[in-house]
Image (cartoon, rainbow, N blue to C red; front, side, top):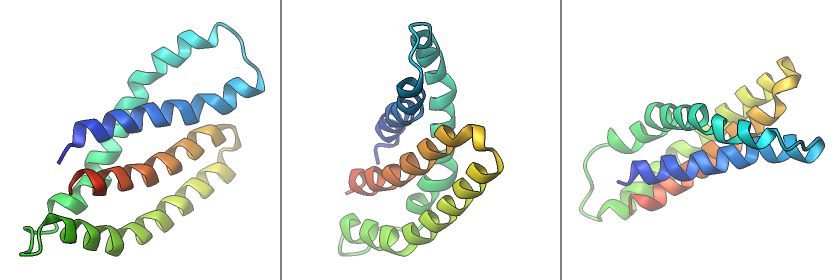
Length: 125
């Protein structure tokens, strides 16, 4: 399991998804400093989210079956990912409606968590 690489890729994806809509609306050269400073809290959020909500599905689902870890990862992904996606979408939609100023945040959260599931399932093969 290569959790650090998934966290790194998720951090890069979340940073891009967060800042591209903001910069496309009104770009200022001063924003580049904030992009680099935001990588620290974004990486912490990605790490906590992955370690607390995605990785446990793969860690605690049990030992690999005789078919190997590829079959186990496919079963975990097919069994839990749809419910995780529905829950995450509902929470992000609620957050977007409730806090309309944080649309970029909730967009990056949703797409990053969905892609992290895919990376996590593929990395564990």
